[in-house]
Length: 262
Ligand SMILES: [Cu+2]
Image 1 (cartoon, rainbow, N blue to C red):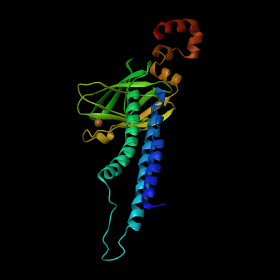
Image 2: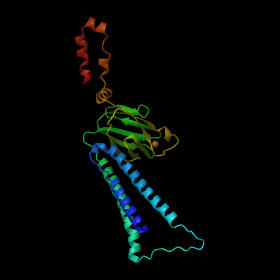
Image 3: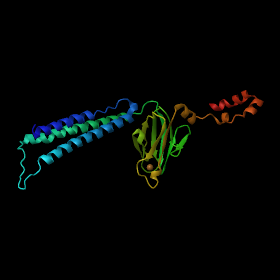
Image 4: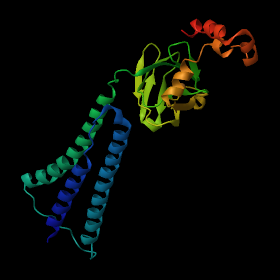
């Protein structure tokens, strides 16, 4: 096997490997987080694989074509114009094809992710120097200190605006991030699949206390969330103590509380 066929072989093997590594579909709407992780894995595998192959080929050439005598003059193969172009362009296209493929996969995934699923719960997010407000639409508002409270298993879409500078809302765990700008409403959605707490943070430097603009996404079971969002009316909570209720009769107290519950 001569040197040229070794080189050709490695280039071909690397291309096949890289193309194989590039398969990252977008699939179901709800799996974006997983798909971003996969795609990133493929990108790393791709550039890692290409890096290793080029490193090996370069090392091999370094050793095999090293100067062995002081007066040695190198001699290269005599390529025709067509051969030179082929050597330059074919490997370039092979490796670029894979890069384009990965870029296209990311593009497709991003476009899929910009489609908000129907029935997503809407939260209005306002960013300002240097805090966040989450407005759940029924008068309930939390700040970054309390966190963004969301029900497990339901897509959440945030309609976002800024009151001052440019901020950017970032939840690393869900692999999502979007800017907030004065005078414009942007959006971002995610599916909290598992309960737990996940950090969110401002990821656009917006001034002195930028680094304080963080908090937690708190994913809680849907029933717990409903109870938190629409707590029982205060009248019910403040129902007469048991002894009192017994003395006055429990039924009238329950009746009185009922309308307030609606
Ligand atoms: Cu900020």
